[in-house]
Image 1 (tube, rainbow, N blue to C red):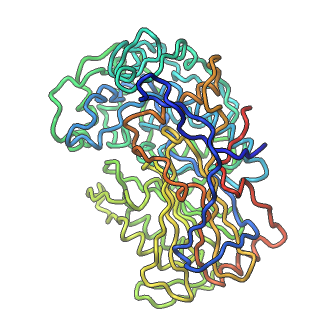
Image 2 (cartoon, rainbow, N blue to C red; image 1 turned 30 degrees about the vertical axis):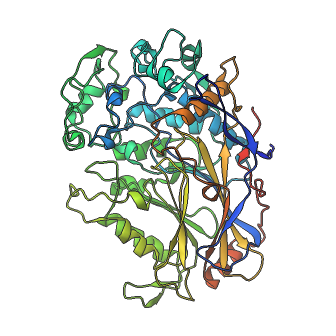
Image 3 (cartoon, rainbow, N blue to C red; image 1 turned 60 degrees about the vertical axis):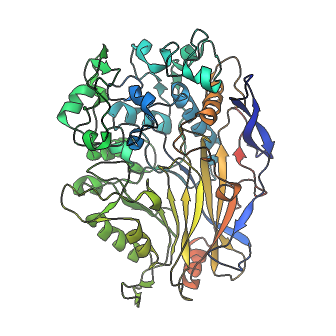
Length: 561
């Protein structure tokens, strides 16, 4: 295992008009230090408290599913339709190979060095049972995975359309991606992408998190009996069939079949395309053979009908995994009252003292632990004001941030959903000498889009008696080569996925989804109380571990395997 002194960056244009660029090796990023939350603090890294990897937004999609809305792709940019997209990505045919390359890279990195991997939601695309099976095949490993999910009607897929609005890599197609964006001919790609492959699995403990695509139809709408009949049925819509409505989300949320009334093609009906319930999602994780059992979820989640939990396996650390999805639908999130009350109890249990609602110090006698929040939606997307179907009060971003600022051991909030890298300090509005001054809010880009990275994070104690922690962030590129080779083996396909993702013109994270170096290769200083530092030093006494990764600033890139 090596950590070369390079990154993967956009390279030269590969088409005559300069529209489509390849990727190349670039110089290492210089690691920066951010101390906005602790002005004047100096970097003095000592013992590692915890080391974990965040990966997010696979959005594993059954390519032949009748529930997909790929035929809406041509309406992208239409006013009022922004929440209905993306409906299609040109890199989709080789997505599973890219995810496998990522998991093999983490497996090589992880043995003996990573405490756990956490996914922050949208692991699957439309809450289908067969999509969830594909996720377990990838993460648990030792499974032959069929990229077409057992379907034989591949000629009905958008990628097989010739000279249409979808990318077809075969030379006979002069589709819009080739004509307008310079996408390449890749003869034989579709046949290579359809080859089943055996998965290897992460080989380290992994945790799950609930995202809107994990529980809602296309990440947007609650399931209905009519939709279940559509998605498990024997025809797949291939056109809208109606005049595009001005308010598609308002019509789609109560009836997710409303946009699927147009002409259809015959396919084989499949029961494994049905949309699963949150309880089935939890049960599938409990039935997984790899560690930890339930991947964070417990039998208590099934009893209580919940999809959030705390994870305390790393000494001195509590990770609180929230369910930020809204049962009434939409792509944005919020937190229900029952989960809010639970969250308060979990925060109190990890603090020897905190501030009450009136600002007064409350002493608990509990052991201090450092607290990490994980959710699918970050603060910028906790804006869903849709009435709760059960009448529960819903809590939004401002409520949650104010709550966390009362608990000084909260140092980090990690999330996905927005498909971009961004690191933001969240300052405590009234910092007190005896409590921390805020926490870091970290968004990580989606695996399904550029830059196709995961994030290694380390919590590190200071060497001296400084009242701060260091959160060390390093991006991990999967081990496929920068340029795909002609053999179109699995790593070649993963390489092509990354290249196509960079050139995708409509990615969710936008043209700057990779973020800046200060959002990627960075050491984040966060002030904490002396009581927490004392507790952490005691928790790791006798088990100090050397840091992992290239601390001169490189993304972690492993050689091909």
